[in-house]
Image (cartoon, rainbow, N blue to C red):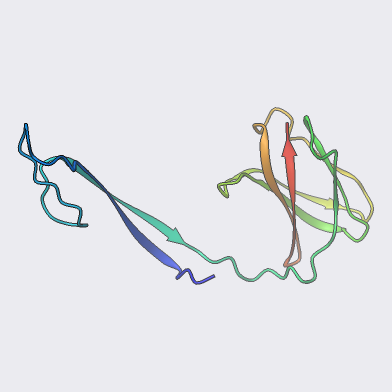
Length: 139
């Protein structure tokens, strides 16, 4: 990835390309300048890089049922201790978050039924600087 962290600016310009017959039109297809008709909008996106998480030593886990019509269960043979469960939508917005103390091999039920819309999500499990991610589908 070659994105540079920090604010990145994007300019969107919509302009009328009419040839000028019937009404005067001075169209301009450059980023700046004057045009008879059109609109210019600027957007700023903040680029951040997520660092400090070791996925190499991440714990494996299973999610069931997947796809699900409601609540989901998570289990992992080597998953134990303090675990942060985060469900994020495809825009990266966290829609569900819960921290729990779990025992290895213990099934954990995440009560997301009625709390999230149908769609694809990323379920992240974070423990002691390690992170594991799986895709979850809610119907």
